[in-house]
Structure formats: C-alpha cells, structure tokens
Length: 200
Image (cartoon, rainbow, N blue to C red; front, side, top):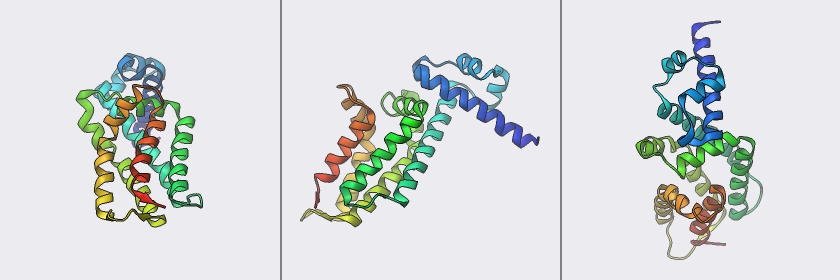
C-alpha cells in the first residue's frame, strides 16, 4: 500500500470514529479520547492528522455539507415533474431522506447550525458554501417554473433570498427552541419566504 493510500485510510478511520462520537454525544459531549476509543486509534496518530476536537468537528461539518450538497445536486439534475411548489417539496424530501440514511450527519448538522460553537462560527459559515450554492440553484429552478408577484423584480428576489439564507442558522436556532426538527423549520422558513412573494 502506498503512503498516500495509508494516509487516506487513516484519515477515513479517524473521521468515521469522529462522526460516531459527535453523532452520539454531540459536539459538547464529544472528546478526542472518545474518538480514539471508538476507532481503536492511537492519540499519536489522531494528532498527526488533526490538532484536536475543533478541527475534527470542522472536518465532519465539511464532509456533511459536501455530501448533502451532492445529494441535493442529484435531485436538482432530475427533479420531479411539477410546479415550483413540487420542486421545493421534493428538495426538502431529498434532505430528509439524506439525514434519515445518515443520522450521524444529521447530528453534526444540528450542532453546526443550531448550536454553533462560538469559536467555530466563522469557519462553519465558510463551510456552508456548498449548501448556499444548492439553495441558490433551487431558487433559480423555481424562478424558471413560476412568475414573480407584480412589483417584485428577480434581482430583489435574489437579494432577499440571500439575506434570509444568511440569517437561516439564527432563525432555525430560535424556531427550534419551540420544538420541531431543523428540517421542518428550514422548510417552513424558506417556504414562507418563497411562496410569500411568488405568484402561481
């Protein structure tokens, strides 16, 4: 086995153990010792690749957003037939199926978006890039399938969407305090945004 292959295998083993640890114990309860124990990984090997818990968590967040964006990209390439509302519903059904199949990634998503560790806020915002791109792609596809309410321009719609999308983590955090999953609340917020301004 080549050295590059050994490195890739080691990184994969560490990340698998990290997803299991963050998935079961959350960011707050997870520890480097827990990651090492889950994966039968020596601390020396772990610290060879990652500086500590925060870097491991960010790597999991990056992998999660990338995988989720890939799943949603596949849906947007071959969406269900129908109007803008059907496209929107299908998009969120794809998200729900993704998280149902990847519960540890759901836990990482919720910790990253709803309970963002303050010291990681800027990095997590940067890591959300692939999801911002997918959400904009969703908006573009929806605009192709409908018309805007009189007096609302496409430019204004995009600016409004970008503003709400940037505030979405804070909105979700507040809305989820009253119960409901992040997926349900995200669908509600974006649905109110889009269908409050789209006509037909």
